[in-house]
Length: 275
Image (cartoon, rainbow, N blue to C red):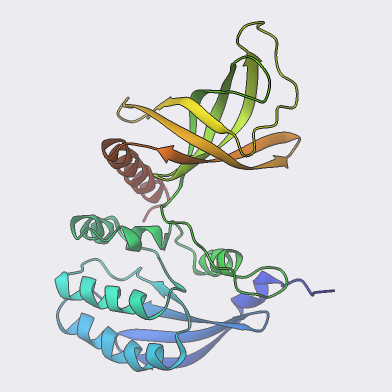
């Protein structure tokens, strides 16, 4: 039987390197090592070059799990963006947190959606380490590969859809979207009705089915998204069913709308947390 991991063991840290521009600590989750870097200034000019110098050899050698705290970084220039890009190219197990709104805006202007997808909306270092552990390590201490292409944001948006089961008739569905990305949605509070008879379908089986006329309206800008999707999985949580739906046919403009909505929602959450 595999031994479960106490993620809070990661809160015990060991300093492994200190420099005027960066402190580097080693933390452990189970037998996995996480390196925790705190950048002590802006990533512009010599400050950005200094970060690259301190991390490059380290990354080349180990390709480690790396969590970077940007609490003290209020500005980043093109050179800093390129250096962060280089860091992400050397290890897929890199995450940022404590990222200011100014730095996030530079990520957007530079077209670095990857940086936003790899940023935790968290200010507390201990909580960030726990998020990192939950993202990358299973309870059996094995590394999890995260294949999600698009960032997701928590929402509560009504949606409707139709589908055609293996018997006659059309089924109309209603649900609430609990999280949303350019690639798909996770929904709950699901109710489906046989369109012709008006009867509620109890315990519907949707996994593997195509969902048509999938429609919802983004709350911030009241823009309506119309698309198609496929139900990939279902799960039960607190006696409520959740469905995972991947978009199978979505326009580029609609993807841009969702991306803008996700970014604005993330900024709002960060502002509420004081980032």
